[in-house]
Length: 57
Image (tube, rainbow, N blue to C red; front, side, top):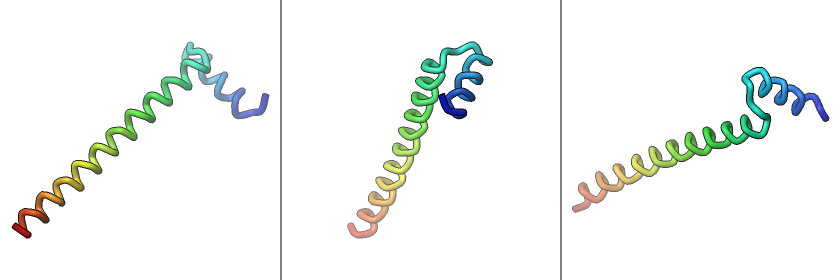
């Protein structure tokens, strides 16, 4: 086992989690953050498009 997985395992033990459980929690958090960023970007683009079509109309 290399140093990085060992360090991750130690951190997981410190907060009383299995490494797999902690990794799953990190992934869930990452996915939810990415989804929020995506939704914000989509809303910003749609707002700009509404303004553009309003000006053109």
